[in-house]
Length: 333
Ligand SMILES: Nc1ncnc2c1ncn2[C@@H]1O[C@H](COP(=O)(O)OP(=O)(O)OP(=O)(O)O)[C@@H](O)[C@H]1O
Image (cartoon, rainbow, N blue to C red; front, side, top):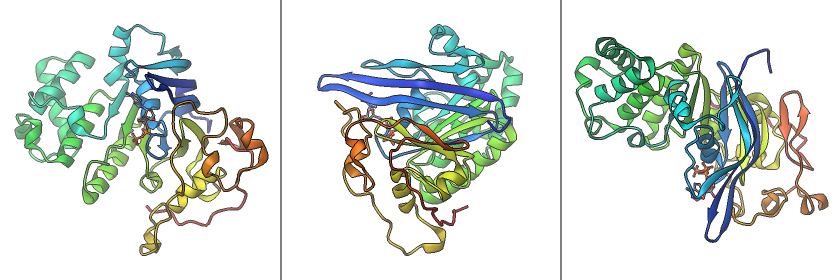
C-alpha cells in the first residue's frame, strides 16, 4: 500500500473470552496492516475491542481470554506461533507498547534509571556504562529536565505527565519498529495531554516507528494518523486514510462518531451523543453490531453480516447501505 513496506499484518484475528455467562466475542475477524513509518489510529467507543486487538498482537491475552483464530505476520513469521521465549525478545525490542496508565508499565520499587537501563541491557546487550548513557539520552529526548539527576528518582517522585514521558523513553529506548499506544494520554489532564501528543508525534517521525494509536476520540488523532480504523462491537466497520474517514466516512457509525468530535471552529456547539446503548458482547447475533442503533439499516441488515469491502482505493467499509454524501469538516490540528 502506498509503495511502503508492510511492517505488521493482522489477518482475520478473533479473540474471545470464555466467561460463565457466555462467550464474550471481543474481537471478530479483524484484518489490517501497518506500514513502516505510518501512524494507524484505531478508534471506537469503550468496549469496541481496541485494547483486546492490540493486546492480542503483543500476546498479552490471559485466560479466560483466547486468540481463537487469525495470524499476525511480523517480519515474515506468524508471531502467534512462535515460542513464548522468542516473543519475550520481540516484546519491548521490536514491538513496544505504551498503556493508558504509566504506573502499569513502571515498577514503583525501582528507580526509573534502573528500569530504563534494564530494558536497554536486556534487549540491546549494552554494558552498564553504555546503557546509562543511552538512558540519560532517552530521558533528555522526552523532555525530562536534569536527566542525570532524575535517573535516581522513583516513579512516585514524578508527575503523571512526566511518568508518561518516562514510559515513552523506555518504549523507544530500543528503537522498536512498531510502537503501540493504548490511550496514552487519557489519564492525564488536558494541557499535559496535548504536550504528550506533540512529543509522540515528534518522536514517531524522528524514530520512523510504525505507530498504532488507540483512542476513543477521533479528534485526538485527526492531526496524527495517516490511516484510521473504526471499530464497533468487536468488529472493524471501516478503515481508510484519515482524509477518507474525515471527509467521506461511509459507515453510519463513523459518521455519527465524527459529529461527536469537538471542533476548534465551533467551540460552543453542543456535541452530539450517539443514541442507543453499546452492544452486549455475549451471544452476539451474526449481523452488523451497529444494527440496533443504525439510522440507515435496510432489510438485508437483519439477515446477514456485510463483508468488509473496498469502496474506493484503500477505503474499506462493512455496510449494506453506506453513507454517500461528503462531510464538510474542519479538522483540528
Ligand atoms: N479480561 C477480560 N475478561 C473478560 N472480558 C474482557 C476482558 N478484557 C476485555 N474484555 C471484553 O472485551 C470487550 C472489548 O474490550 P476492550 O478492552 O478491547 O475494549 P476497548 O475498545 O479497548 O475499550 P476501552 O476504551 O474501554 O479500553 C469488552 O466487552 C470487554 O468487556
